[in-house]
Image (tube, rainbow, N blue to C red):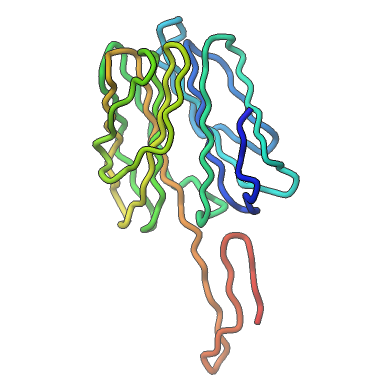
Length: 212
């Protein structure tokens, strides 16, 4: 069970990463959808990363429970983003590596400037496995939970241009079975309406329309 900020308002986007030892099926609470699920295999030395997304709605509460069919060690991370579109997922890519100290993904392309880039990493390589993310540049570490041999990490930043954002390249502290996912979250864009004299009479964005 994960805690969410008490003041999480409607239309915030929640991105959840679940990293498992081996593999299994992961489900979130009502309204959470699986963006991608990537595994290096199904053995005890393998790793699986499942990414879920959700738009905050009335009645969500301040906790989130995710369940997995596997009884092996697992870690979960929830990140809450404000100022992104309710159609949040602009692009994503996933990659995996076995017996390696690094992992990468194919390049992704953003459709608008200002996308939030989120790198979600999973490893079955021992605790504190992750050292750095060198691509895309400028991403900052947000979380790095671990339990037993399973370690996760989350990095994020903003893409200031439209088009190719590059792929994810991340380095671990030791060799193991690794999974990396790079997600681009589309920003909320506010549009304005005007009357025939050029006076602003309304605006819309993030699921809210205002008439003046």
